[in-house]
Amino acid sequence: MRDNRTGQEYDVPIVDGTIKAADVGKIRTDEENPGLAVYDPGFVNTASCRSSVTYIDGEKGILEYRGYPIEQLAEHSNFLEVAYLLVHGHLPSKAEYDAWEHEITYHTFVHENVKGFMEGFRYDAHPMGILMASVGALSTFYPESRNISDADNRHMQIVRMIAKMPTLGAWAFRNAQGKPYVYPDNELSYTENFLAMLFKMSEKKFEADERLVKALDVLFILHADHEQNCSTNAVRSVGSSQVDPYSAVAAGIGALYGPLHGGANEAVLRMLRRIGSKENIPAFIEGVKNGNERLMGFGHRVYKNFDPRATIIKKACDDVFEVTGVNPLLEIAKELEKIALEDEYFVKRKLYPNVDFYSGLIYEAFQFPPEMFTVLFAIGRTPGWLAQWLELVQDKEQKIARPKQIYTGDRGLDFVPAAERWKQ
Image (cartoon, rainbow, N blue to C red):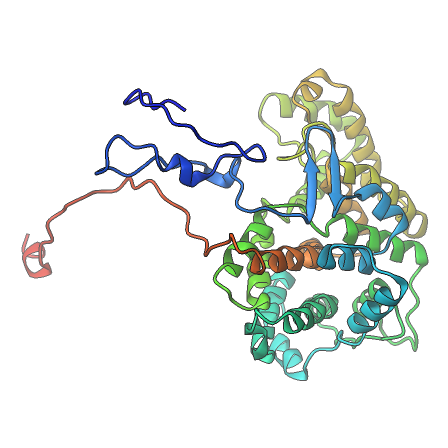
């Protein structure tokens, strides 16, 4: 590298396609001035860690968890097995899976005081706000969770969080509807139990259609991890202070709460409703080209050609609508997708349906209100957050997060006491 200020050249090693920021810091005009830093808002080209959890090739549309293609996991696995894979780094044996399923199943209950805590929220409180506060509150119920250096203790907190997230999410949903909370049923599978806590009323035994259970399980798998996105970065950043995992995951939920991260599928539904009918699509498309409309659910920050999750979720869409009946918005969505994929304007810009384009339609078919969409996202993402957190606390290269800044404010001002300033 040549410093164009001084003409001096530096030999900077390239490892795994990256250079160390500390090596860039050695480039300076003299010993009195600080070395160079990298300015990268949004971390669009900055690696903050080494990770073996999730691999993404955005150009080729590849998504793998621990090396396994998302397509194979969605078709042949289930969410609890994928959660085990993410957390432990390998697929479980029969004995390992049975033990894992048993642990998760028998930790789905939460302390009764958590119920009282959640009942204290206003009737119209957003379920995501309730979930974020409740997960953070779990750290006070399990004070031993602060001992993150103990492997057995870490495992216990991971089991608890994966197990209790559906309970907290379902109770947040019931709170918003003014309905009594439903306790977990340990005879049901993970996803079926979640549906029971959401929708059970007076019936003695809740039975969900297997197609709906499978579709929601697939959605959980598709959302289980996605490399260093905003919420995962939040979990790692807060976790770098060596705080307990509940507080770190609560930070991830807070990041996911934002409309630019977890709220994209809700925006798709609003767009489809605004279009109203297939006949209005050409005018909408022209509006997008002229900058008067936004095409929601197309394109992705990472994927440059196609989102591998979108194909899987489109199939799940068909399965769900077999049970619930077709959402009238589906016809608008399919026609919009068809036109956008054939139109040179969108093809040239590599705009194609992403995972959010169809997921909102599925959630709506389940009769979830839009404010629950991010809660469902958070439940699915929990194993990924925990896998990333676990990797962080065992990584000897990691330090407490402390990005640099470029200061742009005033310098060297003289303070004038209030008594003098106020005379004027």
